Structures are given as C-alpha cells and as structure tokens.
Length: 281
Ligand code: PAF
Image (tube, rainbow, N blue to C red):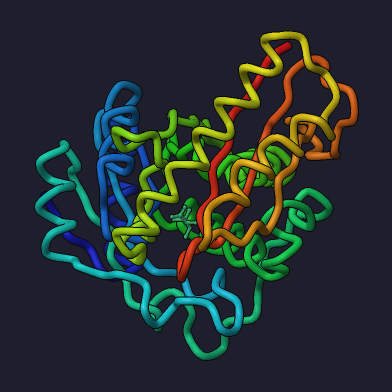
C-alpha cells in the first residue's frame, strides 16, 4: 500500500492509473478507522480496480468550540487497518498542503445544508463540500463511497456532484452498528461506560418509530414524540433534533408518504451522536 502526502504526487498517481485504464474507487475519511470505514472500502472494491482512502481531519468542517484539536487520530493503526481491508493508496496530506495560506475558495450547497445538522453547525457543510470537491479534483475517482450514517452529508454531496457536473458516481453504504445497535463512529470513544449504555437508545427509538409506521402511524409529530420520550429517559442525553424529512429536499413532512428519512442528533456527555433510518411507506 502506498502513502501519498502531496497533492502533486497524488495527481501524478491518479493520472497514471487513469492512463492504464484503472477504475479509481475513493473512500474519504477523517481517520481513526472503525469497521464502518472498512465496510466502505469493501463496497468500493466491488466497483473499482484501485482503492484510494483519504485520511484528513478537515479543519473547515469544525465550528468554533468543536473538537478539531481533540479529534482522535492514530495514523499507524489506520494504515494497518486500511491495508488489511484492501486499500491500495492512502492520501494523507497535512493542513498546509490542502489549505495553504492564500486559500480563498469554498464550495457551498444552499438550503439543504441549513437544516438538521446544518441548523446547529452552520459552517459544517461548507467545510465538507469544500474538502470533498478538492479531494475529487486531487484523486480523480470514478466512484466515491460515503456512509449512510451521515445521511445528510451523502445527500448534500450528491447534490454538489450534480450541480457542479463532477464526472463520478456516488455510492452510499449501509450503517455499520455495534451489537446493541449503536451506529459506529470515531466519536463513540468519548462516551463513558455509562453513557455508552445510554447511547443504545438512539437506535432503539428509531426501531420503535419504524414499528409504529409498520403498524399504520403516519403522523410525524406522534412518531417524533415517541422517539423524544424514549431518549429523554436517559440522564445524559440532550436532544439537538429529531426530524422526519423528505429524502431529496430535506423538508419536514407532517403526514408520512413515499420515502422519508427519520434523523436525529443527540449529545450524550461529550459527543454529539447522529443516527437515522430511511423508511419507505
Ligand atoms: O464523513 C467524514 O468523515 C467527513 O465529513 C469527510 C467526508 C471525510 C470530509 O472530511
């Protein structure tokens, strides 16, 4: 497995691979890999000849007071895990390489970035779309794989790819979960053992919502109230949002029909955890 740290070396490598007719699959990450990331590599391998994973903790997607400095990092462990899952190249630039002092350009998707996570993290998606657009230009992938855990992120990236005519395919891989249902996340490491137990309620409440829908409930307020009451029983849980939205424009729905996204964000102790399910009526 190769490790590339400069944009110019990555450009050269991507050009060489494309000249050789290789399909480049790309998995963007901020590192501190877990099984969820490795599942994205496996998904990418089904559609490509060469897998490039980026490991870059992107400062522009963290707001003031968020955990950019403390975000967990362990490059040696990441490299070992990525290689064992079949990654061919890790792109691991430093901040200066990506955002030199005179960097002035940002990519912003409007409207759908202002709701859900965007409501409490107003600059987050501008940072995500900027780094992802840059990585697409640097790595030149044919296919890129994102996780469904960040459902809004995947919808925003798909919008950007269409709107800016990027010539690549976006795939979204299912959420990987711990045995008790908690969605895997690098930030789960911040949970104390007690909070870790409480965190299982997020998935349980989503499953309860799904069951209500299967039993005929169509009123979004009723479903959200049920989720809220389950989560509020956990002493350390502070709800940021619980929403049921249309899967394309992310507008809230009142009466469920077609496909909807049930999404939530809850702070449990230090980390703010997100989870979601798609439901087709
Ligand atoms: O999902 C993430 O880990 C990040 O938002 C991404 C896509 C790697 C951009 O920094």
